[in-house]
Image (cartoon, rainbow, N blue to C red; front, side, top):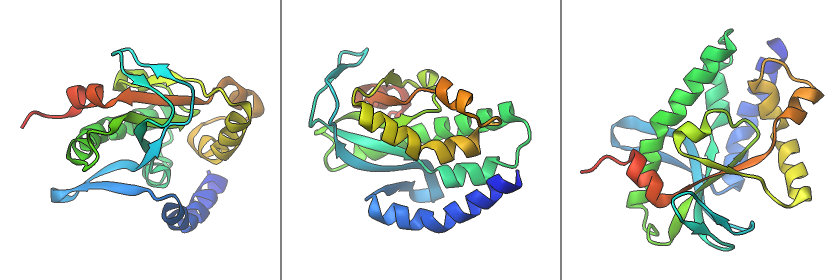
Length: 189
């Protein structure tokens, strides 16, 4: 635990710098509601994908790229000894942020151009219950690069870090269409 807390402390120092260089934005609303996501507009560069609701995501379609604010999540939940409870708390935090993400997209000036949301992860348990679909990136170099860059998060998040454990987890895109997100999470006003 001591090594993990030390790494997290160092990460907290570098996170604001990372935030500046990635063009990410926080999702915040009146009443101090703050989502666990940091987001930015992006153009999709992968192979064409058809989502279950029929939405086709093609190269150069505009998506909202979502990044979990991992430093914040891990700061809140790393001290939890029970890994199952930690996973439940993280899931609940993400679930509670989904309506804020839906509202953010609904109010976005480029709402009509946005086709959906996308994220990338190697920790993807429970994402289908949230409404995401998983797709494997096709580019081998990109997969290796992203998996390597996500290893610190994996190390801090999982109870047993080892090569075998890393190999069991596959890198996936998480995608959801804008329409599905708004249907599932936006409250009618």
